[in-house]
Image 1 (cartoon, helix red, strand yellow):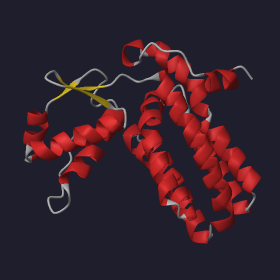
Image 2 (image 1 turned 45 degrees about the horizontal axis):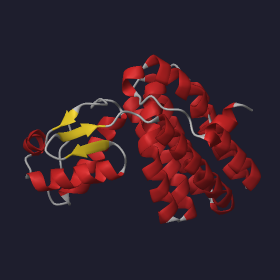
Image 3 (image 1 turned 90 degrees about the vertical axis):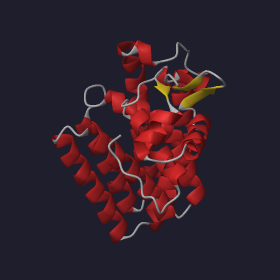
Length: 238
């Protein structure tokens, strides 16, 4: 967590962003304890904004606060990942439909640039940067539609799915495939075809279903021992 805080800005939201990213990329591992004192000392702040950040991370399902025992990073929940993906598909396919009617050349250029930066990050094996650019890509589509609430729902759901996405790189979910899927989304948006845009987004967001069982088998110590919810089982049986 080699990041400096902007002391003129609210501290707690910055800590949420920093700690969230550290959890997503497994810099802070599932089951690991988080110390208010240590984090406050690391960033040169009081314990209050650290405590506020822990509460926000708890609400996102990333940490568990146990009174008198401490705060711990939660293991990855198969059910929560599957449920978050289900919500992302519903919201982001709707966003893709709307964006196909609203996107302009500047929006297309921005999305193409983000994909190019993803390719460059992959070439450096910088999977943390790749993941951040993936988030920026999906957020840019939400911003084209100008629906702040949808963007917040997607951001919340990503807290679960991105933990698995990072573990899946580069092997289980091949990066060239993910980049190809992003290009297909932009092609569909640029064409102005809402059905094509929604289909391209759906294919992309369901890719995690192929990776999830294998990742859980490879890293059993990071996952809760749970069954998939019915909606995900139905998709995998097709």
